[in-house]
Length: 511
Ligand SMILES: NC(=O)N[C@H]1NC(=O)NC1=O
Ligand SMILES: [Zn+2]
Ligand SMILES: [Zn+2]
Image (cartoon, rainbow, N blue to C red; front, side, top):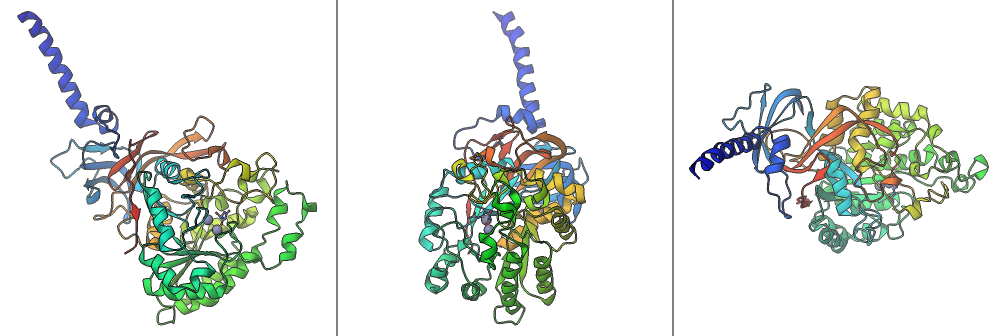
């Protein structure tokens, strides 16, 4: 008996030391085996004080080699010098080597469609896809959900719908529509309830309970927003020439992309922006609308529209602009007949326009990027019919923001620092998220770890968490930039293809 104990004991000791060694040494792999996860665990890490090390950490001061110390969800120190952890507890270090550690992406333009249209997307699928793509915060649009988010009560329905479903943090834009533009009580109720700002359309939105606003409604909205110092986001297209709209070119063949393209010319964007800059002139310091800010969403036209915005900025207007990866990645010439996955508004324009948009990104004239993730159901995307005029307009892309922006961006010279400005810092500023958007002491530990050099193909084997993967225009593309890990306020919510068992995102409400 004794001899049996003596034979088993050393084996046990070896096993225990083996487990302890892996538990502390390499959290990347071994700790996940050790962590006893329960269904209400919303992090895949077994501790809340730890270090992240890498040779490429993107900070506001540049790319450093070093370590980021995280405690209870916040960044509490940043130490330069790889290998120097500055801590006696060296064991709780996740060493990422050459992988890039960057602020998590903040996508300020996402339609999650809940409540009311969870067959299109929803908080669960949308935020799981976001987490898998390194997006740590999304700001949800007030439309495509039903009812639309246009009052305190409808914001309440949204908030109820997020319970136990959001894997990343979620903020909300409220809707500015004619009905509430005239009713300060409703509008102030919505703003006091915590929307981060408002959004309106200058053309039909495609959604019945989200009617378009005129420039007068916009002025009314801005005068309320000025008091709250929150932005108005505008879909800037105006139906200038409805004849043009009714008489598509290319013999009106609705299976040919240019037929659709010709129904929404650049002059629609220019017309809307002309009206807008007529109002933003009053947002200058000392002007009657000081405190208000206009943000133009998804700019497609890189010619006269962009010139108008540049001029307004140089005059001191409080105005900013975003574009989306699909306008930088694709051009109208290459959209196949009938491939309605590429239909969006404003439309994807020609290659010359795309090149000029890319230049504007590099020169800093475009403030930020967003996805305008606007999915629907296959029956409305009409892929089988291939009818560009009748199909739903909207590109589905949320999970692919980072690899798409990087794969196409690096070809025209975008750097990692620029990427993190365009996708994290500037969006945080727009949405008023003071503790997010940068790897800096005191900020939330919202972090994506990824490998820019790793290539993959978005084929049917690729784990896509969106509700309708096949409707995304990026399927079939070869991309580079693989997301390894995603942290939301220090919680490891996604690692190596898997999510934490529970959702620990929180709704973000403005105070
Ligand atoms: N309603 C809605 O989501 N519309 C969006 N889709 C699109 O392509 N542009 C939009 O504004
Ligand atoms: Zn829009
Ligand atoms: Zn949109």
